[in-house]
Image (cartoon, rainbow, N blue to C red; front, side, top):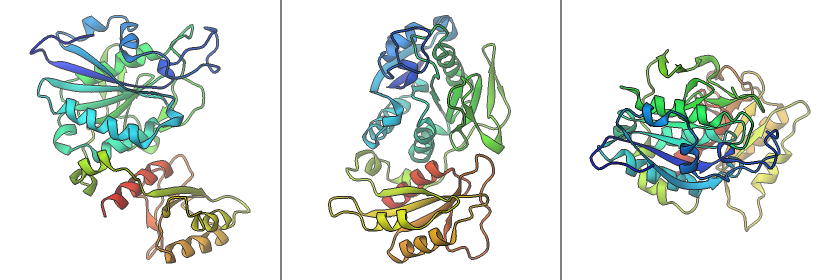
Length: 330
């Protein structure tokens, strides 16, 4: 869909995912190939979209075309450049991104962390997705996309959010919590930010504000950096030892040196004594260590004088993104 000159605009950026997936059999909702349908075609398949726009023009752009399990740093870099460029235009009032569900929460957090506050504290960036491919007998993508545009058009909306199955989640909280059902996302203890009900947004909490991070001051560096610091995630479990950490510390000469570790602890961030000893060795080697929990709900409440840094409530995968950004800012 093309814009009219001088009209207010909503921009939709496509990155692929299940929402753009197809299968040879319309009854097959799992044996599909993701990222097959272009974003312009996805928009054409959304009924009633033109009347929803209420005079806004709709622009679409294909930024990438990947299964989100294969999301890459270079796509994030392109995405943040394109989002910044569009939001900087005074006639663009909101932006939607179609994305696969597998890594949506990481992309959402990345954009939340690095996009300039002056842009996302005044305009919304809405990620949306699907759990069923576009070829399905009952695809959920068109409804999710329509509701994402509804949120992007909402007066006063701002910040990075995700829309799926009628729920609106803040980027800081959103987490995929189901492998198959259309309502695949949760906001954990925080609860949804809003619901989209019959074309109307029912707001439950305030729209999210951009954080004050060093990464925002270095957005150009992040957008064009060629090498990202290597940060890995390790998990605590029964019978765990420190072998994985020690192996990571002995990385081959051809591999990027380990810069950080995020440990997904049990319960309130508890760590097996053997893994804890290995993490201490990592600290002594100059590797940053951040403690999180593998629990879906709750946050780690760090003990006084804890030797491992706190994730400040971030999930393991989001804590990894935050640590990479922090390492790049140093």
